[in-house]
Length: 407
Image 1 (cartoon, rainbow, N blue to C red):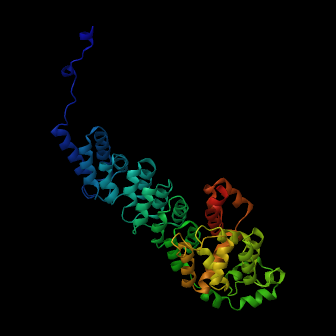
Image 2 (tube, rainbow, N blue to C red; image 1 turned 45 degrees about the horizontal axis):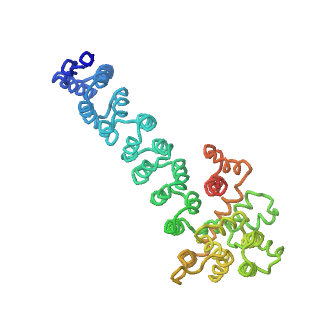
Image 3 (tube, rainbow, N blue to C red; image 1 turned 90 degrees about the vertical axis):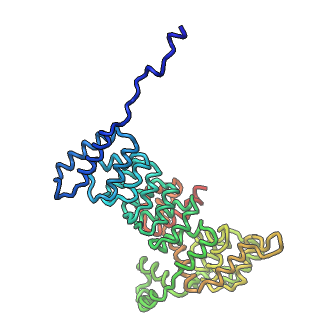
């Protein structure tokens, strides 16, 4: 019985090796496809391509690789042939993906969405990646693909692609460095990315994007009196001029406050600790909303304290007062100044008042005035699919606060 079940491998049919005629025919068909339009018309090329596609489906990988390499520098490749080769194994598709001059954005997007991550990495490194292809590459949030795309300075990134990568950088902090090298990164992106950036990246963000408002102040200098004459009834004008004006502290809040000044409130906080009530009062006196103040006071590093103090004209010593109010260590285990406190002093010394005010006011704009019930609900639900429904400051608030609400 055992002998009856024994199969002699020598009796099994052996698949014939590719004949020389097959390889020669593949080469000849590829030659025809590569002929200039003066030698072959579009219909002849299409028929030849259809025959070549059918043969390539059964061909050996090495034969498919040769054909793909032959077509890589061709100015026009029939669509059926492109689709077949682009989604083949990477070693076969790579010549076309990396150097194919005839590939359209449609071809590339189709490959992005239906091939593997290795193919997307090669596409991300292509010269001259367009905005629409870049958006498709960022859809899946794949770190390896996005890293290559950010490093490709010949690629064009749309605002939507940049915003998606900024959102991903909350999870993959290594993307922050690549984003800071991109010319497409706008202050609205950088200011919100600041909240989860590492200390060195934070310093670079402030150096690069903390701009002066001097030009805006000159352009709008005569409009403050006009708005005052109108009783500041236009809410849009009021918000815009509040962003532009030179004065940071809220004089109206000082008149209503139980504290004589912002400095007085800081000293009270130092003595008794930072309660929610006094944190809100400091925020009001500083001309920002309590939510913005809470974000600053709960930051894990402390650089935002430097921005708050510099923008409001508080002295350097107020940083220490606020540090003590939040019960943070001033020294490390070796008795040296705590690194976070030292970085906070560095940012304070580095920043000009006007530039610090720009950063603080943008934070206040994006973290408070933009928050609507719908936005808060979206943050809680992690609904980033609805991001296009919101304005730039609303999207900034969604990104910066999502971790707070979801935590």
